[in-house]
Image (cartoon, rainbow, N blue to C red; front, side, top):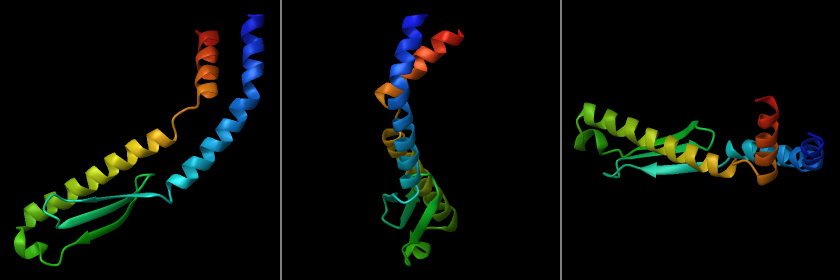
Length: 112
């Protein structure tokens, strides 16, 4: 138990620093975006890495080229794909650091 406590004490300053860095990265996620264009090149969705739709462009000719239902499905699918890619990118950027992961693992062992 003393060894575990000692290791947690060693990790704590690194974990604090990494948590602050992680918070800063999460704030940056709201500024960065992912852009996805539909296969037909009729719809483009821009989504911030925190999942918010920031822009939606529909080609002016799209309503003439696609029936309303297909256009709606294309818009929805394009936005979903952009949000999925944004979530994946956000997870990569906000992944726990080695010190934080170890701290969590050790802490969970104490409570089980």
